[in-house]
Image (tube, rainbow, N blue to C red; front, top):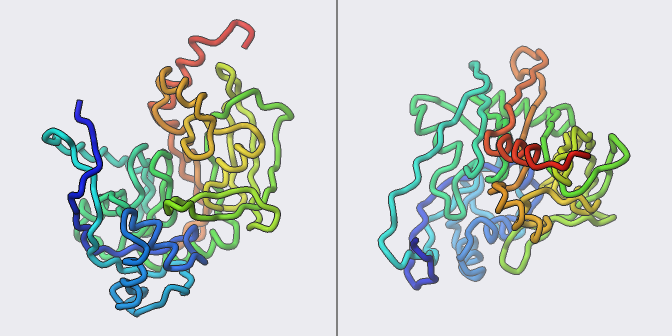
Length: 326
């Protein structure tokens, strides 16, 4: 088995363009760059801004600029330290198939597999949007409507027209787009359906990692949790996002004492280690359904993705090894 070690070898990240989504809106451009250009010294990030190598909507900007939804951020080529295998690297992993759940002239919905980023960046050469553009070279417009974390599977919406993108984004800002997730948590959930309203604060760790915490003066966040069934000392919940904050489900649940199984940021790390031995290789979070108004016809739409196969298998494992009293 190859072992990775730190090396002085330098890699060059090619120039790219990132479109700002709702999660990044309001964030300062310098903090945004520090997060996505991992391994690049802060001094170099500020030099890129000062010299105009970073552009927002084709214009120069300074470090204090706060990003807006749909801003186009050009990232210049940068040199980053990379890890190198002590032996010859193996072949690149094939990109998984992206199953189409729904498509028309304005909207495309896919079932995102786990382990795949929504977009490239931070050392990821190709995400879902880059793959879809490569597969559809004649598409005049194709953009992510929203994003899912790399470990999260399920429904991901893309827009095939700029007008469709702006109209669905307007629905998201108005709170009329509804999203449901399936999530497995540690412990036995009691009390039935619960509305959780806890304000959240985003911050960056010294390493540039994005984190979120519950804080009374943070941004309001509202999640509705519904218990579905108990499974091996854990509970399967349906989580409905009534606001769409970064890491909202994970942070709300961790704060309540019900961390998401497999969550490597806010979870129960000894539990995660135990669950990994039982077959759970990633966070148990799946984007099950999205409901919205069609951006052209105005008709109500609902797109659903079945629980990902790896999570189905893990639930079956818990059921097969459950005690008779469960």
